[in-house]
Length: 364
Ligand code: NAI
Ligand code: MG
Image 1 (cartoon, protein in one colour):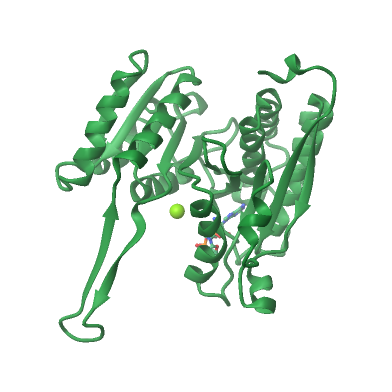
Image 2 (cartoon, rainbow, N blue to C red):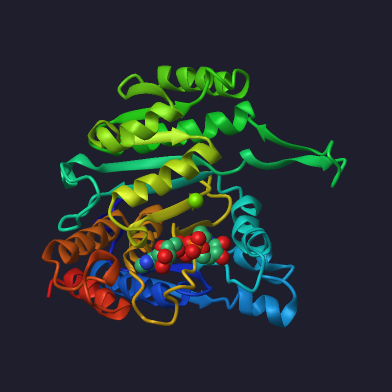
């Protein structure tokens, strides 16, 4: 149901806001400004509750979030997240203690990462324009190579062995591939590319290929293809215009989305949604980038990834028109090129870019 079909009452969404560490504190306020401006224009309101969880909270309490943190977040319609990680806390503590605890605790099994070459942005691919680079990677976000299965034996000896076992269940593979097809149904090109390494990983990846073929047979209107991951990296660089929706395992899609982010011109542009498409739990929306300690506190972080993530949040809540208006406002700002942060060659601050997006959103 589109926003215009829903009558005149103001729709309200409960949003849990976790800015986290470093530039998370700087870019999330810009996304909140865009959410408020979109709400004004499209007739909804986000009731935001802020949570001070992250590395500072860890200093004070010894944990990244309270023990009942997931119960606190459960009633919200969505979670809007900045970044976690700071040089004084080990990265596996901060990442598992907050971000992965939420992703896995709420079974947010589809990590959706769009990558577009925005108008006016010069990516490293000199012969490609915005029409050539507009894809979405769907990353399996619940198991695979990051299932946490394995162990180390004979520690510290010359015979030491480490096992890191990839876990692929038919159920998890099927649900993420189904999600990729559902997403492709909503996009103009209606194409899904599956990426594996079945020639070398002949158990897990052949299961993936079989499930992909089964799901593809249920969606005859969608064009499909399967590629090996090594060849796929070349394809991302040389022929991104042939990619639309890309679905891959946790590790492969992790690597491919960093590549896609770099090809789109800056890590400061790349948005991300951790979805529980069943809607039993709230989904979480965040920029792909981390806390960027090297530029934190300087007011120069690019807020576009965070603002675009806010658009993905609205799209998930059924506010498709408002989401499209935000991404159009972002594209208007990059196309004009007058107000850009230093990562895109400009001299503007985080706040100035956020203000420019809000102004474009309001049509001023
Ligand atoms: P990072 O993404 O924070 O920064 C990588 C480089 O990109 C830096 O040079 C940074 O200045 C630049 N950059 C990132 N976002 C930018 C933006 N919005 N505008 C302009 N430039 C931007 O990755 P890094 O440095 O490897 O990690 C820093 C911390 O963040 C670590 O503690 C890491 O564990 C954590 N991290 C957290 C993530 C999350 O919460 N989702 C994701 C990645 C890293
Ligand atoms: Mg990554």
